[in-house]
Structure formats: C-alpha cells, structure tokens
Length: 111
Length: 114
Image 1 (cartoon, each protein chain N blue to C red):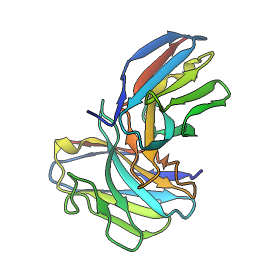
Image 2: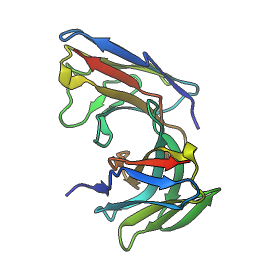
Image 3: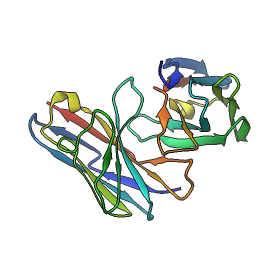
Image 4: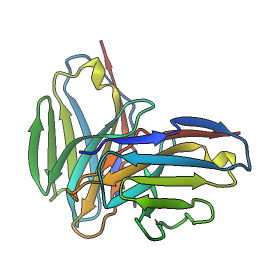
C-alpha cells in the first residue's frame, strides 16, 4: 500500500465551478499536510499547508484535514482558467524530514 | 519563503555523458534536497544534500550515479552520470527554510537523454 494515494484525474471543470481534490494516506503519524500547485514546465509551488486536523482558508482555496479518516481535501471555489495545473498533496510526520507526495491530480478549468 | 533557481532549465544529452545541475537559493538554508519527477509518478527523493559532508542517499540511488556537492548553505549541484534514456526526467531541488514543516521547490531541470 502506498503511503499517499491521489487520484491522477484528469479533472476538467467549467469556469466558476467548485473543485474538490483529495488524498488519502495510511500513516497515522503524519502531522503536516501540504498542497502544491505545479504549472506545466514549472516546479511545484506551495499553495497551502496545515498542521494536524481542521480547516484552513486562503482566498478561494480551503484545505481540510480529517485525521480520523486519514483524508485530506483541497477545495477551489469559483475556479478560474488560471487554476489549470497539477495539484500535489504532500505530508510529513513530526520526526524526520521525509515528505510523502501524491502522484498529482491534473486539473483543467474550461473558460 | 525562499527563491530558488536552477541551471540549466532543460537539456538534451547523449547516452553515456554526464550533466551537472546547479541549484542556488537566495538565503542560507540548512536542508536542501534533490528530487526526480517522472511523468505520472510522485516526486521521488534522490538525496539530502548536507553542507560540509557527504550527501545522504535514498534507497535505489547511489553516489556514483548521482554525485552531489554542497559547498555552502546557498548552493548545491547534482550530477547525473553515465546517462541512459531511463534518466530522462525532471530534476528538482528543494529547501527547508527555518520553518521545518514546509518545503519549497526550484523550477526544475527537464532532462532528455537520447
């Protein structure tokens, strides 16, 4: 079983839609949860990070962590064509410096 | 956050040759990493570049194939040696600034080996 599972998509939505991106994980020791956005031919860009459970909101983006279900989500409201990218989830535990990444979900927002 | 640059941004190389990728950070950082990203796969950690000492390699990666230098706290190089087409990938450096739980990535180097 992989440490982190992420549906690769691709996901295609019309402009203005609400997008839900998800990852599941198996290691209950994970405490730090991150979402990265990667545009084509660019490096991953940190979008959101949260510690432990709960929600975090930043503009149109909301990150949710449900540790009891080992499930994290990223919601994008009022999606824009500029949101078209690959979204990677990542997580790490309190000990060590190793990060575990999902395979990424490819999102296209159609004008 | 940290601003990270990589050189070259892309290259096409012949089988059997070597390529050195440079990573420059705009501030001193303790921890710097090298990753490989292949299509449809998650990021794979190659090694941790340690300043003043030998890099720490992950399982499946060896120093002879991927020698790493880290002469100071703002710079590192990764060499891909004796390349084969299987080495075609995106190579990314990343850093930990003072906030341990976040990691920032460079723009990547796209390598194609013919």
